Length: 178
Image (cartoon, rainbow, N blue to C red; front, top):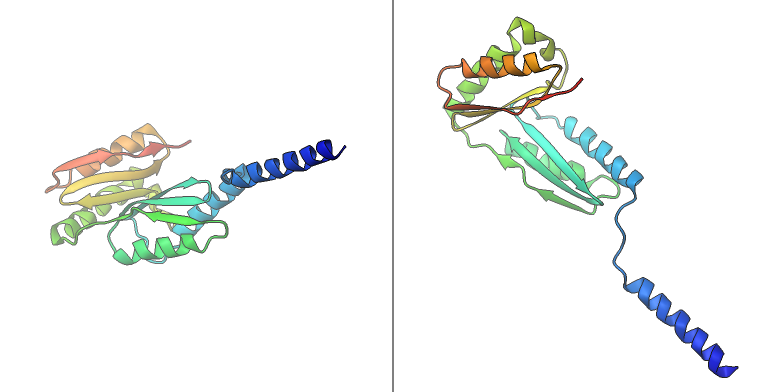
């Protein structure tokens, strides 16, 4: 009787040790979805975010990786600070690139904005607070990021960007969302 009781106690003790030695499990799906929604909201609410900035993120459990490009270093630090305050976020890996200051790039940004957002077939995208077509300019190279309604608008934005003088290349990463 003593041997079997002792065996049961040892087995229980071993199982408790095994459970406590396991690494913590991944975040539940509902927690990850909540963190994704809150990260998106916080990034969209940044006060100095412009059409010339592109922010992206990846949520892996309770860890968030921030990516993209910004023209103002304040946006990078504000984004990290805002995401760190979200309940449940344990770690923030800030990989946001601050674009170099360049008068030529600033001129190209203004010209690209006019070429895309003032073109009558694309003017509908200039209606909201957060404009859906992001214009990223780095050393004369342009990348279009964001979303448009159809393939025609994606192609029009690319053609309009290619028509701006002084640009070395245009990468059209716009996605069509119904």
